[in-house]
Length: 113
Length: 111
Image 1 (cartoon, rainbow over the protein chains, first blue to last red):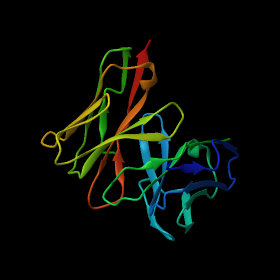
Image 2 (cartoon, rainbow over the protein chains, first blue to last red):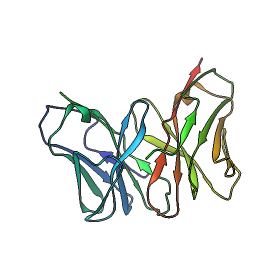
Image 3 (tube, one colour):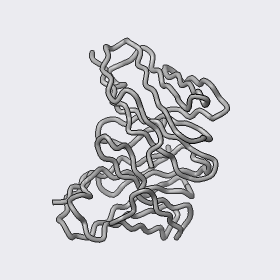
Image 4 (cartoon, rainbow over the protein chains, first blue to last red):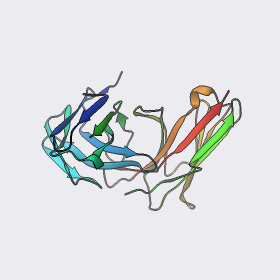
C-alpha cells in the first residue's frame, strides 16, 4: 500500500519559532509537493520538488523554504513562524509528469500563537 | 493559482439521493481529477479523466468532461453517510508537474 507520512498531525508553535514539517513517501516518487489549505481557498502550492536537491517555488513561497536531501523526504521550513501561517499543511507526491495523480499525507494542522 | 471552480460550494442531500458537483476551469488541460477529503484529513484520489475522454465511471462515481465548455461534473449515485466529505477537482497539464485546484464542494449526506 502506498504511503505518504507527515511528522505531526497537530503542532502548536510560537511566533518567531523555526518550524520543520517533514514528509516521507515510500513510493520512490520523483515529485513531491507542499500545499497549505485554508477554508474557502482550496489548496495552494507552496513549493514542489521534481528531484533530489531540486525545488521550484509555487504560488505562495514567501515565508517558507524547503529541503530535499533524499528522494523520499521533503521538508518544509518556516524560518520565523507568524500567526498568518496558521493553517493545514499537506504533503503530496507523484511519480508521473504531466499532472498525474497525487498521493497525499494526512496533513499537519499548525497553529502559531 | 486557482483554476478550477467548484459549484456548488456546499450541498446537503438525503441518503440514497444522487449528488452532482460541477467544476469549471480556464486553460487547456491534459486531464482533470477529482479528490475527496474527509474532515481534517488528507486528500484521496477518486478518478482521473483525460482530455480526450468524455465520460468515466468508477463504482458509484460518474465523471463527465466537456472540453468545449471547460467543465466537468462528478455524480455520486445512491449516496451514503460515508460520502460526507469535501470534493475537489484539479486539472493537470502536459507541460508541468503541478495540479491546479478548485476550492471544493462540501457534501453532507443526511441519514
